[in-house]
Amino acid sequence: MNTLKRLESAQATVEPNPMESLPLDAFDFPQLRQGDTVEGNIVSISPNQILVDIHYKADAIVDPRELERLDKEFVCALSSGDLVRALVVVPEDKDGNVVISLTRAQQEQDWRQAEELLQSQDVFEGVVTGFNRGGIIVRVGRVRGFVPASQLSGRWQAQQDTEVDPEQRWAPLVGQTMQLKVVDVLNGIVTSIADFGAFVDLGGADGLIHLSELAWRRIEHPSEVLHVGQQVDVYVMNVDEERKRIALSLRRLHPEPWSVVDQQYVVGQVLNVQITRLTAFGAFAKIDDTIEGLIHISEMADYRIAHPKEIVHEGDEVAVRVIRVDPQRRRIGLSLRQASDDSYVEMDWRDEARAAEEAALDESGPDSQVEEAEEAQVG
Image (cartoon, rainbow, N blue to C red; front, top):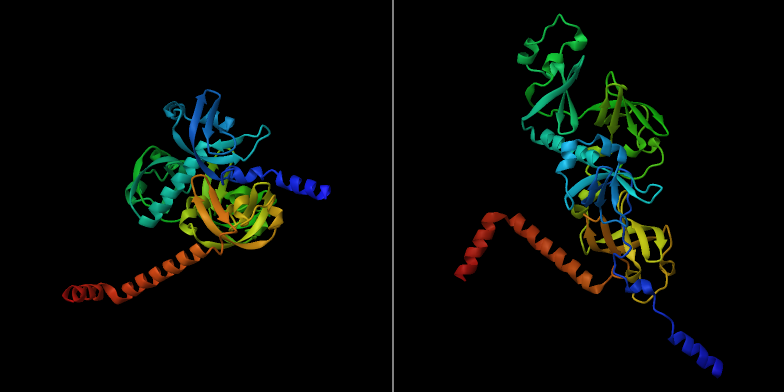
């Protein structure tokens, strides 16, 4: 009898799981990968270091090698508190820091501008910054564009001396301002594949797509994405004329996944996901090839649990409800226990009914809607 009482007393003094008392996003840090684009506020600036708060477990530092090359005027224009966009170079170095690049993020933004110009076919002004035997080089921000000689207007062609060295024929155009249109995305043929990337023939020049630039998702080998002989559109990241190297990218032809995540996923939506890893505070789940969400331990079940492994295991496929979407902090909150919540079921039914009603109105056309309104007023 005394033994039973002691057992009951011990159960009564069991401490609650401390993880349950923490906010849903207490440990919900984004899973950074090389090449991810992040935003943050500058914490401090010095000649040797720029620290940026990217809402991560530690402040990010601008790549020291880049710091030496940054334009001095650009650095002087920065100040503490400024919001900046950066690209992750190293998710975690030996000291636990996230290393970021400011210029590479700017290149990506400029590339999007170039894509918009391609779609709109708007005319823009560009300054000639370089040349080669086949044409001239013009920048759109930090993106290098190529104008083949065949695309130069008769006015510019007539100004050139056809008797000079063909390699130097277009040299006098450097510094000139031209009216231009973006007419095509550079493409090439995959000629060989190595463990570190794929080589592409651009029609007289070879470029390299590094493994990290093949896709927004993590891949182990280029053969998962490309094969020899394949024709591909590529984004020119950099041209090193001295070393005769062209750095290319496939993934930058598409928007960074977190920049459009709120267009794909909304609060209340039910998704089928795969559990990728478990922690003391919850379970991470793969939503698609590039996006992961977190099921906090408090969203695992309607009763208290000590660890997520009581409910799910790595590799399990489960249905979850989206309960939070935060693109800026690169977070999606998921709920297992609310996946079949009656209140959400009712909300889903109302949304479907509203969508059906709107569709019916669209089919009836504006004239029909006006007639119905007039009839209602008469009645």
